[in-house]
Length: 222
Image (cartoon, rainbow, N blue to C red; front, side, top):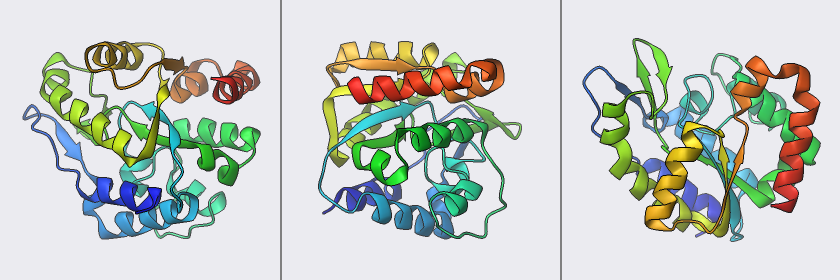
């Protein structure tokens, strides 16, 4: 099996965890078109047996991976940057805007995806009252999904991740939670935190060039 085959197998095997009643789980891979398009993406960029370095976000959002099944890749970028046509509404995701600027600076999708693999600490997303939730937004939700997250990280590593280092998107709660789990379960030798793309785009946009440079330097030298 190629790296792509293992990603697709992982995605199709995802089952929603038990969550508090007011929370809804997003599983985009229940949509046959999402599964088809994401599989095409992984076949395009990961059709080999090379290991990758993991970059773990928080959990999928409605307008990126929640639609396309590909972290930080909204339908518009899937067409315009990755060359994969789709009929989804061409919404954009703010975090994805930063990520694909960074990928361009790194050398483009082919070069970037040869080395790195995006996933999330929690591979399925959550909504409440139609709005995105992070797995750590409430204690009941975090407590409910922690065993699910532990098993998911183990499964993602088996896809073909290097365990000497992993990058964590988010220097706050996501990094703290992943670090605590890593201390307990020894998934990775090192975790390097990166500023979350949405934080950069919402609050630090005037320093965009500096953040893009910081990302690329850490990814190249980490």
